[in-house]
Amino acid sequence: MRTALAFSTVLSLTSAHFTLDWPTARGFSDDTAGNFPCGGLDSVKTPRTSWPVSGAPVQLNMHHDQTRVAVYISIGEDPGSNYSVMLKPQLSMQGLGDFCVGSVSLPEGLNVTDGTPATIQVVTNGDPSGGLYQCADVTLTTKTLSEQDYGSHCKNRTGVKVVEENIAGNPNGTASGDSPSQSAAPSGTAAPPPSGGAVLPTAAPWLFGAVGLAGLALL
Image (cartoon, rainbow, N blue to C red; front, top):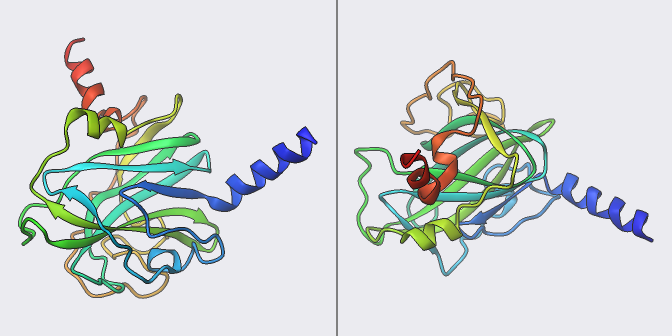
C-alpha cells in the first residue's frame, strides 16, 4: 500500500510539472498545461489578486529538479494571447518544491495606474515539445506588501537555487526577444532579455525575499 501511494504521488508531481501558487492562478489542467496562453485556461479568474506595481514575488511549486522559468505580463481586462512585456527574463533553477521568484516589478515606462487590470503568465520548459504555461489575473495597486505578507508569498524549499539568470530566449524555445508562444509570437514591443547569464554558485539575491535580504545586510 505504501509503495503504491508513493508511486502515485510521484506520478502526480511528474505530470503537474509546476504550479503557480501566488498570485492566485486561473487554475490548472495537466491535459492542457502546454497550450499557449495560460495552459489552455482562457477565462479570466475573479476576484483578481492585488499585485503591487512596485514589485512583489511570484510563488511557484516546481515538480522537475531542473527548470527554466520566465515571467511575463499583459495589461488589460482580457489579454488574449498578447504577453509581450517581460517581468523576469529566463532563468535556470534547480530543486523541487517551493520556489519564489522575488523582486518582480514592472518595467519603467509602462503606462499603468492604481487599479489597472493585468494578467501575469509564467512559462517553463517542462514540456518536451514546448513550454508549459500558467496565468494569474491581477489588479495592479500602488499599495506595497508588508514584510509579513511578502514573506508569506515568498518561500523556498531547502536546496532550491538559481544557477543562471538573464538567459537569452524563452523557456518554450522561441527566439530571443519573442513573447512566449508555441508558434509565431504575438505582436508587441518586448525588449529581448540580456544574453549570456552568469552562473551563480548559490541562490540569486532576490531568491531570499525581503526578510532574507535584510538578513544578508547584517552579515
